[in-house]
Amino acid sequence: MNFPFYIAKRYAFSLSKTTAINVITFIASFGIIVGAMALFVVLSVFSGLRDFSLSFTNATDPDLRIETLKGKTFFISEVQENKLKSAKEFAKYTKIVEERALFYYNNKEHVAYLKGVDNNFIAVNGFNKFLYAGDWLEPNTNQVVVGSGISRKLALGLFDFNNVLEVYVPKPGSGMIENPEDDFNKAPLQTSGIFQVSEDIDEKYIFSSIPLAQDLLNYKPNQLTYIDFKMAPNVSESDAIETINKIFPNQVKVKNRAQLNDALYKMLNTENIAVYLIFTLVIIIALFNLIGAIIMMIIEKKSNLKTLYNLGIEMKYLKNIFLFQGNIISIFGGILGLVLGIVVVLAQQQFELIMITPSLAYPVVFETKNILIVLFTIVILGFIASKIASSTVSKKLLE
Image (cartoon, rainbow, N blue to C red; front, top):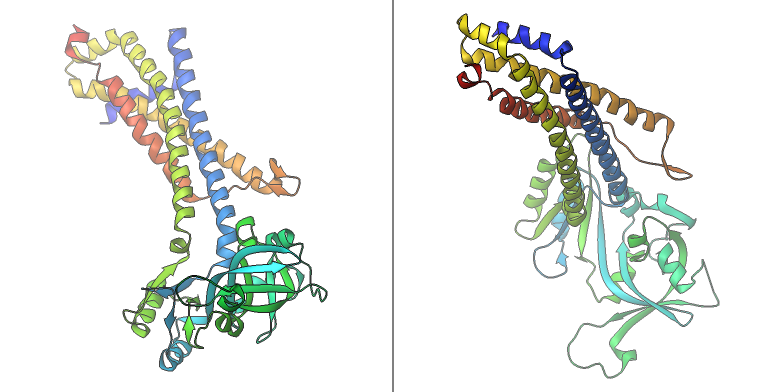
């Protein structure tokens, strides 16, 4: 084993007598370096974009949420609520009622979700930090906090006493609507604050106190759409879910952040895989040059190989010389490319060289797993390329 590796090192780090072989080897090495660097940089960029995209949902979504298994709502008993209060797995929990409603203001209307929340809501979600105008709503009042998108569409301001924001919710029942006044529950609202998170959320939600929402929807005080949880420090997700299932046996389903944003996570993962495959193809193309360089090296060293074979060196060891040579070139090229990629990523993090907007730098994240992915890819593909090239060494070639 040491003998083929020793010769492979000599071949890998010394120039050939033939200029064409040196040029092809340089091109192959350069291609591997650039491919490894590009793959690491792109993976780091997508890690940054993923974290940037998820930062909005992670900032507003709870650690866990429970929903009913059937229908839209479920009931929580006093016993169950006492168990939740005493459960050590949760720092806070908040009860929520949510339903689509029609909002009318100054001859303009907009369909959005009315989200009734209790006093613990901002403690669980920290949603009040997204307020850019006004204050969070007072409990047990008709105050609401409106998304900036809805505010723009309705031309809605804060504490407008001249024009009243009204909410209309269909009354439960069946049959044709004959008199709209009798078939809708309605209530006047007072805008106390405006929030801004993302375009989708800003045009989707209006927050109210939970008694107001329950009254509009004809819900009972213990009838909820879902409950959001903030887990206590150092508590595992599995333990928290197990506790919830014990308190609500066969009554609710539990979702974590990834499940609450299933479509977004799938999209980001699909994009990441697609980009990885594209840049892996670039590395594969570069390794074709490596195969060509090794084959030309085999042809050039044909007389030396024949001498070694006549001295009794087995054919598998002769093949291993060029297998090791190809692996050495690909691994060293991959490591050098990784070093350059790490420098680029750290430089972007530190100095914000590339900007999306004047105030927002292109997001990149340095992750160890991306280093391992690049190394694994280079080692595997380099081994396959070297194996293909070294397989051309045969008795027929040396005859």
